[in-house]
Image 1 (cartoon, rainbow over the protein chains, first blue to last red):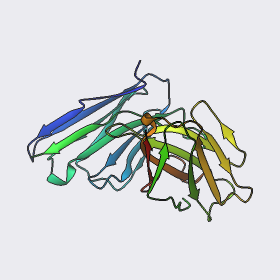
Image 2 (image 1 turned 180 degrees about the horizontal axis):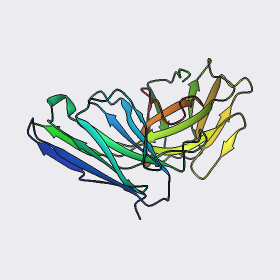
Image 3 (image 1 turned 180 degrees about the vertical axis):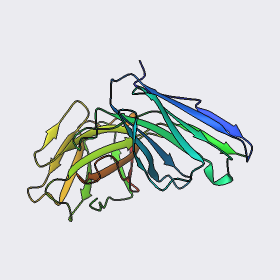
Length: 114
Length: 111
């Protein structure tokens, strides 16, 4: 069973469109995250949710809106897609926000903007 | 978070131990050392973490120096599937919700 699963795995779309990426974890974790990996392969955190509550938004544009319907899901909706949004987006989860709790990642969603 | 320094690349022969170094000379007392790896086209995979004691699990061993200014990740018997980018991350208690990834070390295991 996949612990952290993301859909879709690949997403190709036109500039200006709106799209969503879904993430589900079956680990019973309280905390979920979205990370972005750009073309230079740097991984940066975007959002963190704990018990469905937004904990941090790391200076991400308002076009990005995370939604957590329950603790097992954290979806990412992106409005008015731009060329610079092309990247790999990773979802992760951890037991809680504790410093000694490792984060477990999904396999990513590869977003390409035409 | 404390800054980490890793060599950009390393090679290892299959079946031999791979020893990946990491310097974190500005680490403070409440910061953990984490290791992740990213195999091509996959998500980062958690390997191991520690505070001050050496740690071992089914994947690897983590050796932290007594002054905590450096650490070594040891893969005891490297296989071709261990070829990946390995990230050493120092995790701060003040911003404990996130991992700050650097450039990592590309480990290539050769047959």
